[in-house]
Image (cartoon, rainbow, N blue to C red):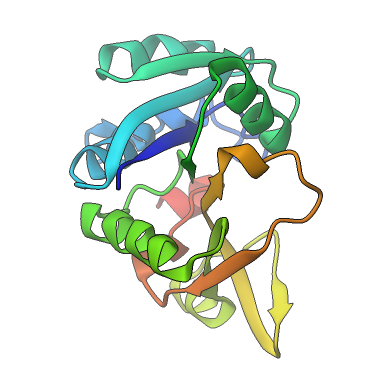
Amino acid sequence: LKVTVLVMAGGRGRRLKANVEKPLLNLHGKPLIRWVLDALKGSRHVGRIIVVASRHTPETLKAALKFGVEVLKAPGKGYLADIHYTVRRLGLKGPIMVVSCDLPLLRSETVSLIVERFMESGKPALSVMVPLGLCVRLGFSPDLTLNVDGRLLVPAGINIVTAEMIDLDEIPEERLVLELEELAANINTVRDLK
């Protein structure tokens, strides 16, 4: 199975307070988004890769065109709204993996593992989570923490959803909890980047 991947790169990056769009922040000589794209391209389970930019990230849109992936300019009305817009606009079908552009430590093997777990689950959606304790140990301060069956978990910024079910209010989903530093290293501030 190969999934279509939406790399979400259209947010304002307000918390960052940098003079460059968040997806283009330099980390060891490469923009954040390039680290994510390289990991995706290395997974045998990834088919189409579409960078979803917006009016808030015009330079990211230009840069992504040079990275050899598809690019779509979404309205920039929010993360979920831009996902829905992209799925409808492109008429996407089957499993869609949604990945935040700010996970520079993501590895191809982890991308493959997530897709395989989705296939094994038999459910139409999967969300990846990391334990809050891991984020805190690494010095990250997540915006959102969920209490799932007594465990404090943080969304990792990677989800898979079956495109045909995207408009349903509730989609049965598998929660995949992975205690991997690469998934906890979500860059939202200059401190996170350091």
